[in-house]
Image (cartoon, rainbow, N blue to C red; front, side, top):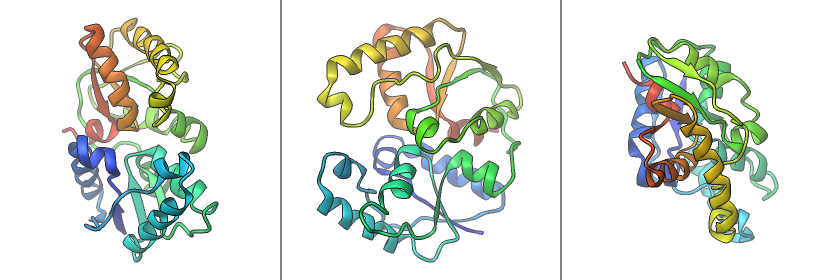
Length: 229
């Protein structure tokens, strides 16, 4: 299967290791992975801010950049949701099927045990887009549960938002900070060494809150855990 990695703006700029982990993982599972070098933004920030014309241009560019692949895999439910749900609103076809990573592993490849080894206590935060837009369900938990040595710890009020929400954190900073404080308190109340999620944007928000509060909990994308051996 010819698979393309859509790394996303945030991961490419701030968390490039996650993109490398996705490639490592997919190659381990027998996929031929490509990386269209001309890829840019999916246009989500523009679309959410009401800038339809530039969002449409970016959506059309995405379809051109990823043409010819059997599937596109991204380590971001937020961007996957934009492509699948909002490209049609803009009158743009999504091109190849776009999957969030855990969807691709479980649904497309039929794999739960990816051969990962990660001997740490891990808790999982279901991001809003993964939970409510893509509805990935328990796929990430099943993948984490199959990792050798990993102890999975339930996160209290796991389905509550971390307060990031892209431009929401900027336009509604006071509310965002209050939501983040609740999430940080929930993480601090358990004995986890690592907090895992599917979107680096949410991990950036929560990780910053944990660091400022002095809680020594590491944040890691699911891809980085599943690539570990």
